Amino acid sequence: MIHKLKSAESLLLAVGLLGLGLSSCTDPYLPSAIQNPPRLLVVDGFINSKGATTLLLSRASNLAAPAAPPAETKARVYVEELGGPSVQLTESPAGTYTSAARTLNPAKKYRLHLTTAAGQEFATDYQPVVTTPPFDRFGWRAEPDGLKIFLAAHDDANATHFYRWQYEETWESIPIIVPTLEWEVLFSGPVEGRLIPIRNRYPLICWGNEKSSDIRLFNTSRLSQDVVADYVVRALPTTSYRLRHRYSILVTQAAQSEDEFHYWELLKKNTENIGTLFDPQPVQLTGNVRCLSDPAALALGFVGVHSVEQRRLLVERSQLPFDWNISSEYDKCPTDTIIPKLYPQVFGSAYNSPIRYVPGGTLATSRECVDCRLHGSAVKPPFWP
Image (cartoon, rainbow, N blue to C red; front, side):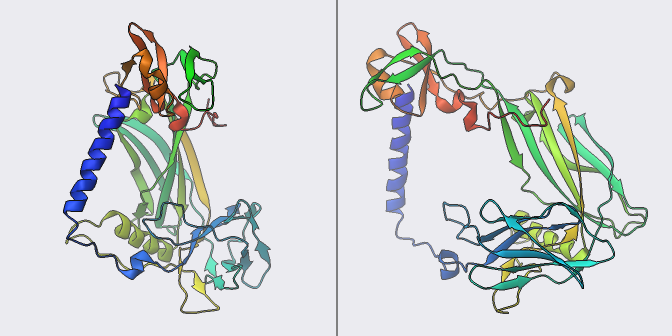
């Protein structure tokens, strides 16, 4: 039963802790730099030459810290034109600084300049504007091993060379179990209650969403032409639950300076290719944000000056091969029959949910199997058909 499964997990945890106690003669080595990392300023974003500029400021934190990195608030952030005006960015929400949509002069150079609330002053060098070429093609195809999202682009002037892509995926999340009962609390605690016909129904559909974490780069400088042909920006296996109903992907294409490209190339090696003695070893990576008030102070991030191009597509399950064994986020949801005397103990927990009456009691499962809000948002995206 569900409550017994919870007990078994607790037992396994206790056994695990016991095992840790038996092996405690080996003490982990935690260098002070890991336990107390320097609070480096982190600058995430770019100066958009054809639209709004959005920059996120935060402070580096311990990798083991449970909370998100602390936002750097109340900074004064500017985009400055060499020999020209500066535009201040507005903070909202905390740590996020945004400008109005602008079109920068491609013949000019621009930089980021900011001062933190504590008085530290940071800036990048002035950089020329890099204009991103449009997509030549953008689409998808079904191959034996899964779905491939591909694109193509080129620059007739042979001046781009350095490309980077990011993507954001959205998919429908539809539970396969729809409860007809709920637990009504009667007195002071959740274990005092009763089963009643469901009043607060769970959403029937939600939308999962995830931004890319991998770094997608391409360099055409060694090719005879500045052409990106049939580049696969995202691949999904035939079993991916994201393809179960309807799937969408938004791809952002950015042309970069050579320095910015090499920054992302090193970052890719540091984050994705470490694992064996033969993999590239980590290097110190700070970027192009310098502290003017204290040359010894470091900042992380590379703020380039460029435009972006975006394209979105949607894929329906009916468009994919019928023999693909596409999984569901809810395929492995267990159910169990709960006898009446255990109702308060089981359904008094926020982790469990009644489904319907069955002979001998009530069928139940975990809440994550019936509440799709634990897998995404119940608010329909504005671009969804």
